[in-house]
Length: 84
Image (cartoon, rainbow, N blue to C red; front, side):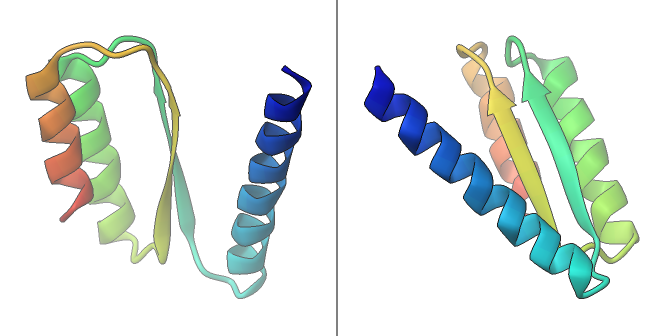
């Protein structure tokens, strides 16, 4: 259990460092939270956020995922929108 906490803390620090580095260069990085069950509504939300990020010329999108799963078709829709 303790090993997982260390790895989790390391990953969070690495992600924050990467985001802060991008922000320091005055680049835009969108953070898109994906929480709860994966549904068609969640897929539509993610697609809209990706479109907004692209429209504003974001350098990157950080997806923060906290889910136990959901509908497979909606998950594929999210994957497809993230590839645009």
